[in-house]
Image 1 (tube, rainbow, N blue to C red):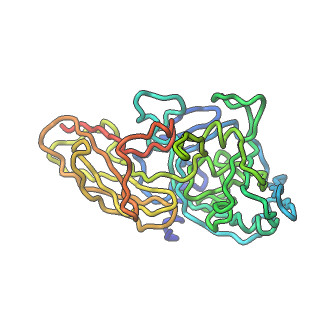
Image 2: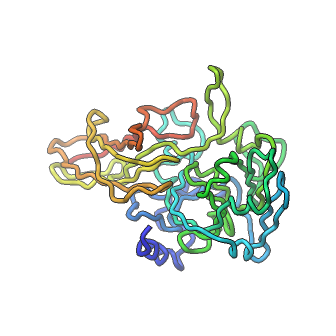
Image 3: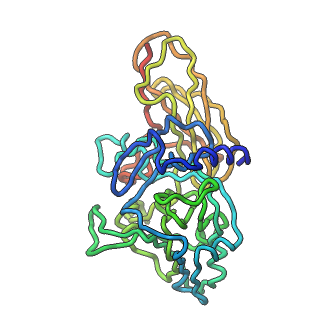
Length: 370
């Protein structure tokens, strides 16, 4: 990311209100706000426009009293305060986070859950300590197999099956991913302290995985010797897969390949015979977005779009396409689809085994030509 781009976004957010104008309210308490995706006009998403996904009320935490514990199956448990964490070696990475339920409103028939449209996604520069530094200092035991991350937010989930009591938000990562260099224990977002609703003072950032893995208000990191089976790992944020032909439940993890149209917005009126610059963004998990195609004829024919951003790991690429709008008035359906470096493209339809998550078929954007 160019320094000028970072400075532009940092300047825009300095002194700004906690939530930007135009944020779409999906739920007021706990706070679940959506980025108005048609406002996509920069590589980095300003803090006050970055989507917010919360399961419980944001905890009231102070940097002065904050403590992060690293414990469990380790040789030397650690307890770090905020200043000690910030004194450790740090890295800054541009990372796209997407809620696993993004685009749920496009499922037919309508399903339960927050009715996210296009904006439960955003890209920010995150600064923090590589997780593997903390794990190396603590010294993982030989039988450690996963790392669990627990936030300070807690409450009673409403989705069935409901656990018998209050639970904290917690997720785990396999050891291989947890030790990979890109995973951060972050304390800055776009050059500023992480805002309250984005996990102040410290949160996890797991590039390439859906947003539920990037635990906010992080207070505990502990190594375990058997697979973690917490509520948010098995009951929610999980999907059906097959093992030897039999259905098995797996936790959500890697972000699926996807392209979205930012402009035009749904049911926008466009003059017949004009030229319209269609634009959007595309992203994936561990791979690389290598191409984007656009259809203006109901997914009948596809034409290559042009990238605005170079490829970089774990971050979206904005794209554009000059559409010569037909002279014939009527309703037109636009859709975009991405292609990765291996030549794979998005699926034509939603996989029902994914439930209300991982929605990455080409999303239909209907416009009116007059």
